[in-house]
Structures are given as C-alpha cells and as structure tokens.
Image (cartoon, rainbow, N blue to C red; front, top):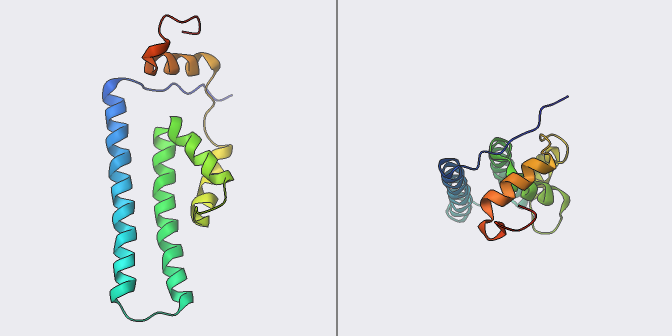
Amino acid sequence: MESEWRADTGPASLFRRAVATLLLARRIHKSVKGLEKSLEEGPELDEDDRAERWEQLHRRNAQATYRHIVKYKGFLAKVGQAVSASGGGIPEPYREEFRALQDHLPVSGFQEVQRVFCRSASWWRGMKFC
C-alpha cells in the first residue's frame, strides 16, 4: 500500500510553490502571445494549419502544467481535477492531460488534511476542528 502524502506547508515551501506557479503562468502566457503574434505577422495559413499550431502549443503547455501539478500537489491538484472534468473554454489538450489527476495522486488522510487546513487557516485556530 502506498504511504500517505504529507504536505510541506512551511513558509519557504509555500513561497517556492508560489514563485514556481507564477513563473509557469508567465511562460504559458508568453507562449500564447508569441503564437498569436506569429500567426498575425507570419505567412497566411489555412484554418487547419492554424488549428494544428494551437493544438501543439496547448499540448506542450498542458504537459508542463501537469508536471507542475504533480510536483506541488495540494490545491493545484484539485484545480487540475476540476479542469479535467469540465468543458467549456478549456482547450481539450488540458482536459486530456489532467484526466490522469483523477486517479494517480497520493491519498491524504483526514488528519493530514486537518493539519494543513489548520496551519493555513489561522482564523480556525482555537476552534474545535483545529
């Protein structure tokens, strides 16, 4: 049986995770803007070629995001699971990539969830739950 996952909730860990998440978001944003500019200024492409370029970009970005989620887990994993189950404006490569998050992340027991929640939600301190 797989051992229970324990979250690292120390200030340095949270800071590292936040910085890594912001850097990934910046890289994805720049890649999208770069493709938009390339398609705008570049040679005329038919709709199939344009769609293929977007598909490739979304697939690369989805893979990078998936790796980030698996590394940092926690709330990011829950967001990824929700994205995998949603429709709407989320590009299909993200939903496909994130489907693995439904079953392939380590389990956290109630005590671990309670520990993380109580540590991060200071307004709960002193309450019966914490």
